[in-house]
Image (cartoon, rainbow, N blue to C red; front, side, top):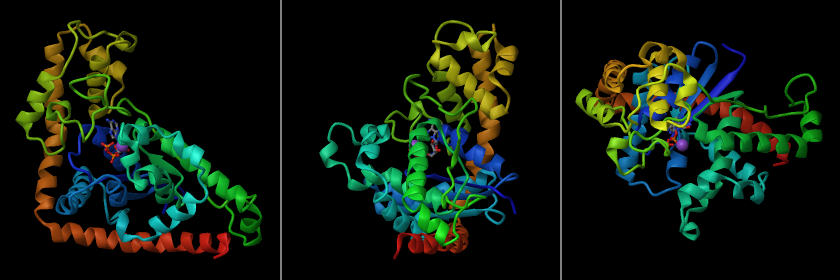
Length: 345
Ligand code: ADP
Ligand code: NA
């Protein structure tokens, strides 16, 4: 339908939160009118750290439900889970042989997730970025909407695409498989779509940490399935400083907690931070927090409700995933067959 293709994924690792929604899922929804979109529940990524099998199954359905409840249309676009399309793992292997150790050694997410006991991290956690490159390039996606935390992985994806294109350049040209006028490149250099006021939503308890699924404090994040009273109490308890809100964005510098809440309001209402400050700047923080509670409940309440309704019908969700995988597989097989020809298999 469209010329350009979007791919993105969310891990089924529990506790889907406002950061996942504003940094990723809400933006996935908005892109549907301009791109062919492929949205994936990335279960192969999830098992790079231990997942209880029964929980994993539930969480795959929960992320799928979140996609659909948020407004992703699985009939017009593709929604599926990664393990059902074996091309992801196959292309990742080829990319493991294209990517250099030095490139992966620089990945900060691995260092954070592996922590001090690096010797005990899974090999999969280390190789995660080359699987992510495979996810994207298997569909030759041109654009990837993600949160700020994924920027480095997107740069690696471009490095892998570029090295593959140049290593195999003569073969790509000989086989006539290149993109564009020069016909030398097989994989596009994918553009990240990072940005907006909620590219990095921070913890409600600590403005220096990102809001995260794995934060032990439930007060640090708003989960998509939280009830209205939980959302309200988490926002009221959110850490702030004693100053009133500034009237201009400049005044948010050095005030990470205030900046975060203003960014959340801006992203939820689809207005710039400047507009939020024009409306609330100079006033009491408590007034702003009350308005944020109303906005968050109005926006997230229906999504959480619909998620709960959908997960109560697992066979319906499984049917959506099966249909999505069948359609994804057609696109994936085409790329993978060409890659095999290019590599010389
Ligand atoms: P998490 O990082 O919470 O474990 P994923 O890795 O599955 O979740 O990320 C899903 C999407 O949500 C990615 O695009 C990621 O960049 C985005 N994301 C995760 N946390 C945040 C956050 N705190 N703010 C903005 N976007 C986020
Ligand atoms: Na992430």
